[in-house]
Image (cartoon, rainbow, N blue to C red):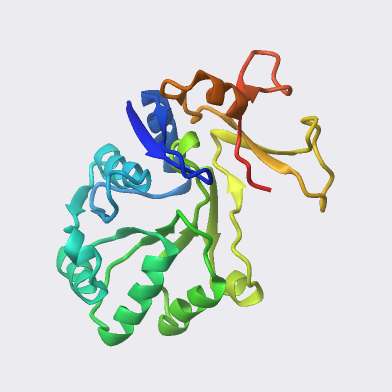
Length: 243
């Protein structure tokens, strides 16, 4: 379907080969967790070089909704962006945490009504102390906030965690929640054995959203996409490097 270049922690760009199946599986799975409808209005806030944009693009297309493409300059102006959200009636907003923190400040300067139904986070760890600011500013019902952990090699998103006032009030750390229904997460040791609760291990992801591999880099692909020892049918796991 596309090749998305990412450097990860190495600083060396590598082309991740994402399949049509991966994108369709992501969106079909999301339909079970989100109530996206054809009357929704989404923004394409992020660069198409960042895989969050894949979610922003295909989400409205596959649900029959409307997509507002945000000008690069406007995306860097939180005050103008708040005005855009109101003027276009945006209901589904996707943000990195750092952009959302600026949006909170801009929202305090402009209390215009926003019909947001979902605010989805990705790309960075989410600080609950910042999310509490949003809930403090919206004591009544507000949009459903959802934290999602993701990796380019697993087609944008891996996990899903709705956030509410009680959860955010009680915790400080970002919670990534459970894997999407199309995926499974294993925490394994160096021998690919599951580790007990409380023991540090590496996160491996299995399921229908895994990339085909790295473009023109068979050696690297074989070290990151490894055989799944828990499935006799020859499926693969992606080794995330995250502990």
